[in-house]
Length: 138
Image (tube, rainbow, N blue to C red; front, side, top):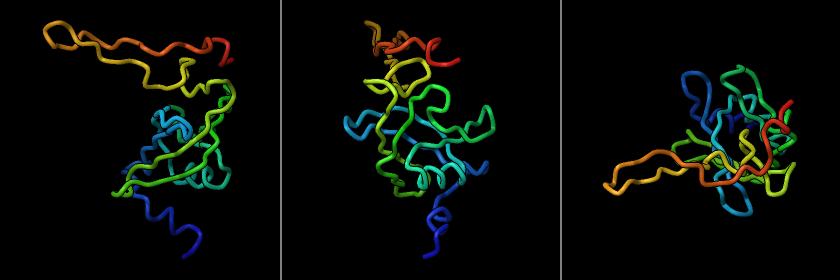
C-alpha cells in the first residue's frame, strides 16, 4: 500500500473537503467541528497536531496558530462511510483546554432551553468563558 493510498480512501465532498470532529481524548467531550482538505489531513497525520482548512479564509489553519491553543492529535479515525474524520486530541495552551474562539472549552456551549409548552425558547450558553477572547486573539 503506497503512502498516499489512505488519503484516496477518504470521500471528499465537491469542494475537496471532509468534515472533522475534534474530541478530547481524556474526557470524551466533543470540542469542535471543522473541515479538512487533503493537505490538512496529510499535515495533521504528519505533524501530530490538528491542521484544518478554513473555508472563510480559504487556507490551511494550524489550530492554535494565533491563540496558542494547539490540539495534539493522538488518534485519527474515519467513519464507516469514509466521509467524516474523528480526531482524538489533547487541547493545550490553557488548563482546562480552550478549543472555541469564544474562550470556552468546547464550541458546543449553548443548549436549547424548552418552554413550559414544550417549544424551544432559544439557545442558552451553559458553559463558562474560561478566558476573554480579546486577550487570546491579537
